[in-house]
Length: 345
Ligand code: 5AD
Ligand code: FES
Image 1 (cartoon, helix red, strand yellow):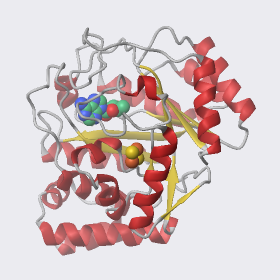
Image 2 (cartoon, helix red, strand yellow; image 1 turned 90 degrees about the vertical axis):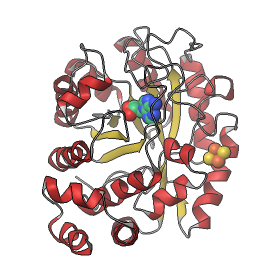
Image 3 (cartoon, rainbow, N blue to C red; image 1 turned 180 degrees about the horizontal axis):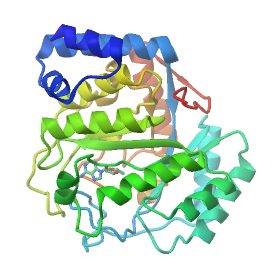
Image 4 (cartoon, rainbow, N blue to C red; image 1 turned 90 degrees about the horizontal axis):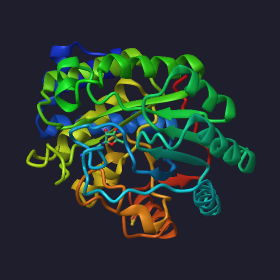
């Protein structure tokens, strides 16, 4: 199996069958995979870990993804939206804590029309010309994406969730399609955003073949960022009785993606920290180089519950910032307060 890792490092791609074999590898190969990924992370980004401040500004959503706790049909979910002033206050606090990227993430909330979003983006852009603005607000028309870009947004996160159309249809209602998701990603790239795709590891009905297809899709899209974390069930969704994705499979995928796209920005996600107390540290040691602590006001954090038992929902932004620093230093890395643009261009 070691030769498969070496082949991946050399050729930056494997066949689908080879990816499937590698994903099923044993512990010693996994260790070699992580070491190789860590070496490549250091070659490209040194010991620097980038910080992104995540502002979860609305949990209203018109979509109904079967896995997600804030899906439209979850009538038990207490809904909230932040005002423009709330969001600017989060940015202010974040800026003082050293954040130079703000990620505005929310459900697909009709209240936030393009006009309203543009107003918010322009205000952040005006106050913080030195910061990157990342959006994660789902599927929109190319015109809308263009307007946000023109107001000052730089980056966009839109996970593809799975590159297999049949699998996609098992995770979403009929009106959501992989085709439309892919089109959005291409539109975002064309406009000039730094783009992030991604998927959940161990989502219901996912096979190792599906994951190999995700890897091939990512290679082809060649994004600037890839967001991935384990699927974790939410007790008020149709997928409440499925198991979570595993730590080891998530770590293998982080390593493979780091080796395949050496300059990619790869977060160690909150979901990873939720299934393992040292998940973020392990993610970084497997090749990740970004962390995205929460900047949302404490009063709403528990309400942005995509999955059960999400960590950090009871902690102040300043607490998370310090905690993160400690965690990263403990593994010999350091947090940098730079915008941290992708070198994968
Ligand atoms: N477990 C893990 N990740 C989830 N997401 C949504 N629901 C869950 C869940 N139950 C992820 C999706 C989405 C991102 C914002 O959060 O991949 O794109
Ligand atoms: Fe939030 Fe540790 S990062 S409490």
